Amino acid sequence: MAGQLQATPTFALQPSAEQVALQTNYITNFNFLNQYLPDTYEKEFERYGNRTVASFLRMVGAEMPSNSDQIKWAEQGRLHIKYTQCTSAAAAGSSTATFTVADANVTYIAIRVGQTLMIQTNTTSGGTAGVFNKAIVTAVPSATTFTVAFYEAAGQAFAAAVQCTVFIYGSEFKKGTNGMVGSLEAEDDIFSNNPIIIKDKYAVNGSDMAQIGWVEVTTENGATGYLWYLKSEHETRLRFEDYLETAMIEAVPAATGSGAKNAGLMGSEGIFYVVNSRGNVWGAGTPTSLTDWDSIVSRLDKQGAIEENVVFVNRGLSFDIDNMLATLNGYTSGGVAQSASFGLFDNDVNMALNLGFTGFRRGYDFYKSDWKYLNDPTMRGGTNGTVATATGTITGLLVPAGSTSVYDQILGKNAKRPFLHVRYRASEAEDRRYKTWITGSAGGAATSDLDAMEVNFLSERAVCTLGANNFVLFRYG
Image (tube, rainbow, N blue to C red):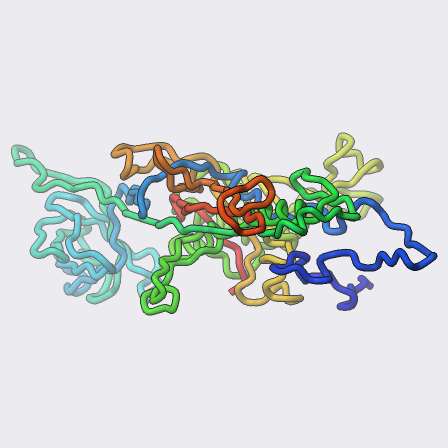
């Protein structure tokens, strides 16, 4: 039977950083009046390894300047024309019929006289599967209606008021007639986002800066020294750099009437918010079989059909993908079917077994990458405690690789952009990508009479999620 991790002891979540100087910030057990002095290790032990979570946007995106409070771009609409909520007032067997289009947000149909249509009943609305007609448009009486003549001698193949899907597949004109009446304008979807200002600060007074530390400290970016405030300053910097990424992932716009909106804050559209709103969402947590992935591939076929995709996953989704792929690459040992994949030592079964997969192809190429942010217990990895399948738990994000072409409102022309990229405020006089400055009168600063050193951090940025219809968010619920 598999073992079970006990709830106690558990991982520590209490931050080591404090806003004020407390006795818990410093080592206090050195009593030189005691004849038995303690033995101490000079170097601080890094018990949590690399504690930073930023890396996602550096892997898949880019950064570029912007000089406006709002970033706007246009994404292509569909090339071909299709309506899914069309009903005919004619009875079955009629040779002609007038259809009404009731699709959402359609105020003027793009169907013209002379175009040929495929008309098929919707099985989701009570229609019979496989029932369809071919027809030619003979008139467009109003903005949302069109009249057709059926090509089949039997006439309309379905009853009146049955909901149908209609799409244009061509046109036909008699000899010696005029050309097509009317023309179509390209329809773009306009999206926008606004940057948010992110700040942080570290402060230490001059007296503490003159204190000699007892323990050698280090941080993930390689900073080291015997001054305790040096560690705190570097950790503030690392924490701020993490927030530059996590804010772009988690940000949401301030809703009308919300407390944030009433306080004058705008918010921003983070990656999760955008994909939840206009992307694809897998609501069952983790796809565990080829059938599950086939449904994802089928959805991607209906979207941009990007050839290469990266799936950033938490540990649960990573294992589910590994287990699924392991069962597909079978072999027989001693007359018994086995399920395994041998990825090392020329796939020799007697030498090594590797059940960790980094990618697979199923219609498209999918590359798997562990996402620390979804596993870290102080971030998304601990939002639902010990319940790994709680509603709202995000297990992964599928991101299309490469770039896409959009119309950049600032450049005034089409430009190639990564599907995910960050825009930061900048001009010739001010660059707000990553600002840091020191104020006070300690630590070399001489900007005020404050007996302290204050290190300030600031950035103003927004993330642009282009072609969100090509992304897939994996979550529970």
